Length: 280
Image (tube, rainbow, N blue to C red; front, side, top):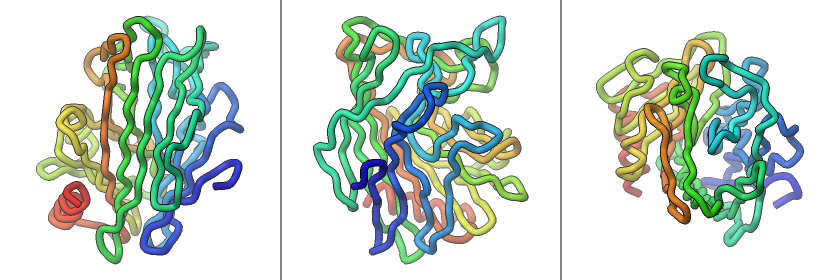
């Protein structure tokens, strides 16, 4: 690992860099993230700090409201006021790497803001080969409330902005000339997929496909946050419809497995690959 990033490899190829994020300004809610992430053929499938949303940082965990603190970056949605510039940004601080090598890592993180540490995270990330043209990113995060009191996790949706239930695992894909196609096993299009629960959701670009799946019961309960027309991005929402209350010392665990494939997959191909990846 260099001072600023860790290289992840799969099938003998570099498929991602995991960046510390410590050089980011406070308004972006500094946090570790994966970028660039590529297919096995080398096609980029992430974007960071794009002009449309400078606080979008590749692949990672970002939450816009932890007891009023912004760990997403950018403006904060305030009820009856709308998006507002506030000095309320938190930071995810590296604490330790219990395991760290090109085949994957385990990281301890401190989520700090305002009065100090609110959450302690244990993050486990591993690349897994699925086929000769597809690999999977296995990403688990466990958030433990270390504040000594009850915490509440929210989103712009729970704060009064309909349809904006983002917060949790989030993947910002690259913007191309045409909007990506998005679909699940039985629905298609942004309107048909966004805000709904599904075993998996796929996003296809010019010559790549991402297939994301919740790999635990709790994760599958979270609705998908999907954008395709405005920008390409998919996330698993911790607080899409109502605030998530986390008692002192309680731990919230989520696991998302994402297939990263070369080419444009159809429903059948996407279903086959994600099933293979989740059960590997």
